[in-house]
Length: 191
Image (cartoon, rainbow, N blue to C red; front, side, top):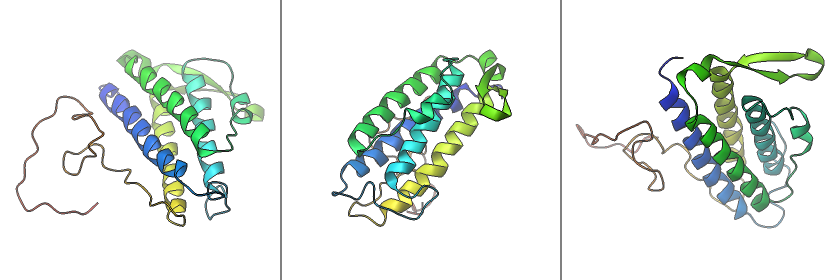
């Protein structure tokens, strides 16, 4: 994946931004809503967001060759949205810093992941990052849908990259120098 550094750096920043928005919404939930049973791969917002963080920690640990592996799954169980949001933000900052420090050569380097009974698998850094970001989107989408059944309106999570409709909290040009957007037809509001 030569030439992908800007992509991975932008995805890490997008990931942090989307997590911040989603976790802020969850912090505004009423009593009992965070842990309430809901339809999803994991049966509550609490379990879904803890799963996202646990998997993030597992993959980043492998990327930095931290050696903690599967123990991180047992160490991730936040009971309230505020403490989980704080832990996710700390992790997201570490992931952004990791991506900012990557070189093109790093992307093809392999790192080890202990898969328990399946043994140790050596994975390429670029493919681990692609998987990590896809995993985030997959489960954030589920949490977003769960929020629809609560007292809190789900936040927009897709207004990060293009200039039209970009959230004002996003710094311009996440993929590099910003070029002025052009309007050739009346803007639509399709998302």
